[in-house]
Each structure stands twice: as structure tokens, then as C-alpha cells.
Length: 269
Ligand code: SIN
Ligand code: MN
Image 1 (cartoon, helix red, strand yellow):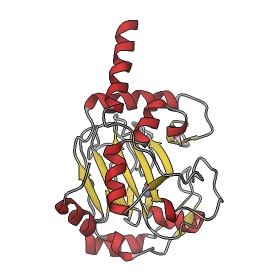
Image 2 (tube, rainbow, N blue to C red):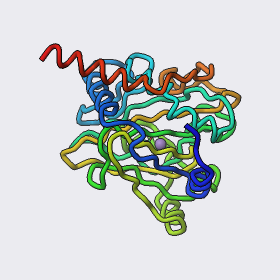
Image 3 (tube, protein in one colour):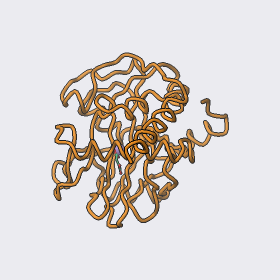
């Protein structure tokens, strides 16, 4: 799947691009079932909120079939190869739960801020692609973006080891206010199956989820293979060390997977 000139222009100007309903409801539903199974496991890669509900599952593409397929899906990998101009590897993969009632905030940050400081990734030639596997609404803790903030390079940040269960380099409030006074603040929402591409320099956050609806989003963080990390300070399943280019699968891989899951459920009903 190739992005049009207009889409490339929008990405360049805003730092993000929304692709509504890139995956079907059935594909999203199959991944939601997988996410719940992963969260119910006792794996070390599943980090939890203070309340005990899952916050994120790292590296799920290495131990779950649906996420393995998603991690090499051409509808995701191709546009990123186009934007980064070459082959990409998986720097990080997470399935963020933002669970109903208990999903906690993600403080204001730039992902490249953490990848540079913690992992010594040389350049911001890396980006995120977020796949909604629940409907994301104004009510259930959507991502908040400051459009255009990706043009500012790496912004000053402090290492937040306190406010949530996940350490992150975060921006202070004065800086966020200054940036949002210029760029505004938006919350892209959409159906399960929609996709958001965003620059690793885009300043973003998300509020807690007090609604009764989960807001599960899968993040592929893809990096140009030449730009791989130089320091191995974090666990391998948080900042990956396999820099081989992703080999894209067939476009129908997830549809087939969703169909086979459905027929198994029907057979056991
Ligand atoms: C992130 O910024 O890495 C996650 C934000 C979210 O899932 O709300
Ligand atoms: Mn982030």
C-alpha cells in the first residue's frame, strides 16, 4: 500500500496521518481476543497498572500468532518503508490496554526522546504505526497529539520513574503549554481497524480511561535498518536487537487468521 502525495504532505505538515478502517472489524476482533489472552498470561513482558490490570504487553509479535502477522503486515510496513525510504526492522512492539475504568495516563513525551537517550538510536529515522483494535472515542483515553511538534527536534525532557508503572522521558507542563499554544492539541478517534501513523518526534500523551470501554491499541515502532540502536540498556523485549529487515507477508494473512479463528469458535459452540 503506497501513500499518495497528498497523504505524504499531510504527514510532513502535521507529523501524523490517520487511515480509517484499514483493517476489517473481523481482523480487529481476532487481535482483540489475542490481546485478552496475552493479558491473562503471567508473562514477564506484560506490565501492569498499580491496580493490577494490564498496561502493555511488549514483544507480543514474538509469542502470539495474530500479532506476528500484524508485525509483518504489508498494509503497515509498506507505508513506513516509503516514509523512511528503505527497509525497516521492529524496534519495539506493544499492545497497550488502557483498560476500562483503570487504564492510566501516558505522560507527554516524544518516543524518539527515549530511544535516543536510553537506546542510542542515532537519528529519528523511526516511527510509530498504531492499530486500533477497539473503537477509540473521546471517552476512552484517546491519544493526544500536538500537530507540527515533530518539526522541533528532540525537546528537553526529564526521566519520569514515578508517575506511572513505565519509565519515560517526559516534557514539563510549561513546555507542553508553549507547544500546544502554537500547534493546538488533537485527539484522533475512529473505529477498531483504523490506523494512525505518527512521527517518532511528535509530542503526544493520553489521559486515563475512566469509561467502561477498553481502548486497546497496538504499536509497531519501526526503524530504518541502518539506524539501529547502538546501546543495549533495556531488556531485549523492550528495545529489540534483531535488526534484520521485516519480510512482509501477504495482504490476506490476517483475514485468513480471523476466519480460521471464527470457524474454530463455531465448531466448538
Ligand atoms: C505511547 O505513547 O507509547 C502510548 C500511549 C497510549 O497508548 O496511550
Ligand atoms: Mn509514545
